[in-house]
Image (cartoon, rainbow, N blue to C red; front, side):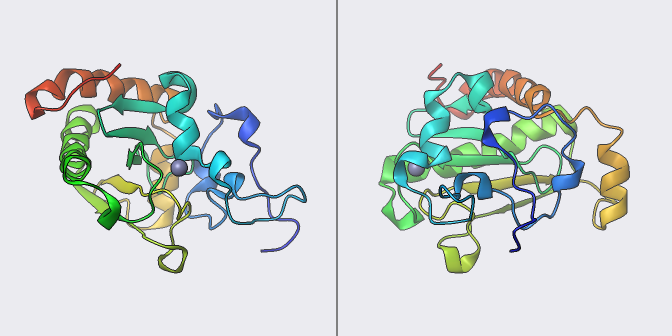
Length: 196
Ligand SMILES: [Zn+2]
């Protein structure tokens, strides 16, 4: 990474600007990985965005749903429109560190997120997965997070995504609100709590 790579200032979180230019950018999430010189570094626990996020309001933290053990948060640097993440409240890096209750809600919430997306934006498919450890590509390796990315036919190459996102209501705050409404409606049907 060179000195002139743009790193977004977290002070503006959540961003109100167009996210198109962030798609597929390798510097995503580096807003939490800076030391005082502005260079990427390992995150300190107190800077962990997945520990800090739930301490904010739903709107400021971009939280779409809060369960008992896990929560759903919008990705500030989405792979695709509507990119959501499921995280445990506990600061653990690997899925093997979850206890049975956490693990159940973690996976159950992932299926709930799919149902929410189906209701809100009718995807044609999904990418779901976890990068565990820095070597595996985790942006915030210290805190487990499962990506849930909705996919639509025709979004598989760059230009259609750009064209599509520019014509969709993609502000993260608006997307969060739409998801939150659907989570509130669908969580009880999935046997999941609403700890709001
Ligand atoms: Zn954390």
